[in-house]
Image (cartoon, rainbow, N blue to C red):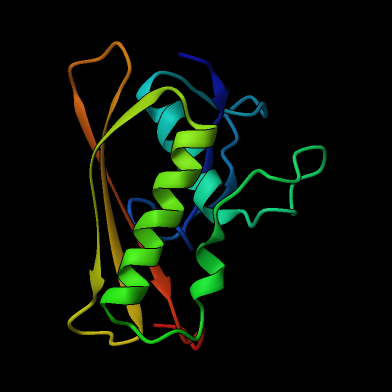
Length: 140
C-alpha cells in the first residue's frame, strides 16, 4: 500500500464531520496515512472529482455531479452505481468491490445515500464507505 498525505473533507466523508483540508502534525508537517486509510482517501478523492478537473489526468474522476437536479429515484441510483463502479474499476486498482448500493435518504428527500463495501487487495478486512450526494444542491 502507498503512503499518502492525510486529509479531511467533511463535505464528502461522513466519517469526518467538522474537518477540512490537510491534517497538520504537532511539528508543523503534513500528517501521513498508509494502508487501508490511504485507499479510503483515494476513493473519496476519486468520487469528489469531475472528469476534466484534474491537471494532467483529464479522464480522472467520477461523473456523480452529472446527477445533480435529477429525480431521486431508482434510475438515478442506478446511474450513481454505474459511475462509481466505472471510476473505481478504472482508477483504483487496489480494491475489489464487494457491494455497491445507492438509495434515496428517507429523511432528506434530495439526498442520495451511497454505500461502497470493498476489500483492499491483499487484505482480508472488508471496508465500508458511506457517501451522500445532495441532488438539489440546497444543502441538507
